[in-house]
Image (cartoon, rainbow, N blue to C red):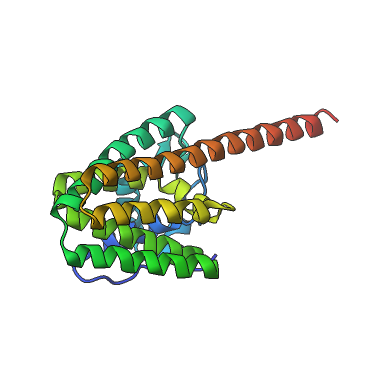
Length: 239
């Protein structure tokens, strides 16, 4: 496996850069739910000392992205259907409020940044560039949260988005996902730039509800796949 780049970003320590790289690796499907993470592998992939790797793992564990199993070590966390549903319900509530606040408090600069991110997302979707789509989506949310002007709300949403990162890459690649997401994000942007707080809140909730439906579907499909794999192993072992 190729090394995961720890991009040098101004103001970030080496540990924080390693955290970002590992978080991105999980969000983009480099490491899959349930996959074991060894010190040796992560040290080689991140290009940092083992102590830095362990600090990064502890941080992502506190965010819910990694789980440590006794006698096995850290693995990429998995989410059950009910837990994912609960997290998406909370995310819809919080992002609805973020949209409303942005409509009420945002400036023309915030609105321009949102529209620029939407244009970039459309271009990336047409080109089928998954990484660019994820970057543009993050830029859209960054502009909306900047406009909302509530640090506590931003922090809460960031925590939820981190917990749900394991769905982001697979959802972005899912056939028809962007065709559904783009109009919803456009509805959010239109409501915010019109300074219609109620409409912005409703548009944000609709968007997250759509994301939740796909995430729950993906959980069910993974469960079916895991069950089928266990049955095949049982059948092979009985022969």
